[in-house]
Structures are given as C-alpha cells and as structure tokens.
Length: 139
Figure 1: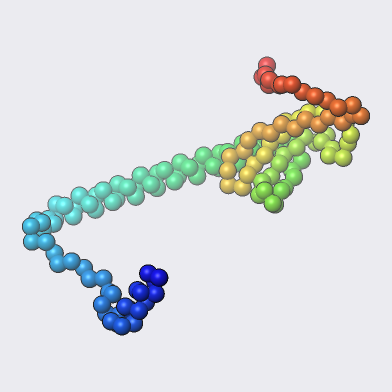
Figure 2: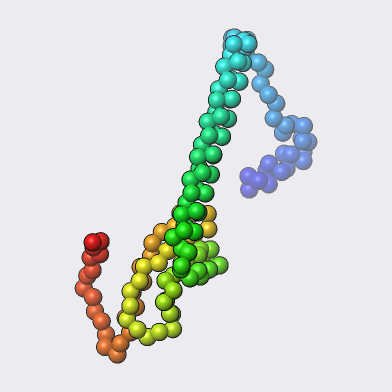
C-alpha cells in the first residue's frame, strides 16, 4: 500500500521533488583549520601503517602454520572432501572398508582456517556395545 502511494506521488510530482538536498552549511560551526587537516592526515597514515603491519604478521603466521602442517603431514594419506571444503590427513594404515575395531586420531584442515584434531572410533561385532560415558585423558 505504502509503495503504491509513493509510486503515485513520484509519478504525479516528478523525480525532482524526491532528490535529496544537502542542508545549508551551519554558520555556528568554526571552519576547519590546516592543523585539523594535518591531524586527520597523520591519523590516516598511522592507521595505514598499523594495518599493513597487522596484515604482514597475519601472513607470516599463516605461512608458518602451512609450513608446520606440511612437515607434520608428510607421511599421512590426504583425503579431500569438496562438499565440506576441508582436507583430512589420515594415518597410512587407515582402511575404511575394514570390519575391525579401532580408534584413531587424524587432522582436519578446513579451507582458509586453522587445522584441528579429530577422533574416530569404529566398533564392529555381532553384539551391541552400550557406552554409558567416556572421559578422554591425555597421558
């Protein structure tokens, strides 16, 4: 309803009535001085330097993480999941088709994010296994 009224007013009055006009400058505000302009320029330059330094640190950290990941995953099998957009690094003896009981830790690396550790536990038997609770401990 509001949109149709607005469209009707636009067509009736013409586009010139709907153009935003800048308000007249206030006479009470003091004019900007060259010192104010210099402060603004120096703040702007400081921010650019700070941003550049921050980006350089992030780039160095990302490169160090990638280098460390390559070193750690040298002997592991690489498996790519294009749907989840992440790469998994699995132990060489990992076999998805086996009907064995096992557990393993492996590394997952989402695209453009930090790697994290995942845990997989497979139980295969004719009897059911009920677990009431579990508490991981690192030795």
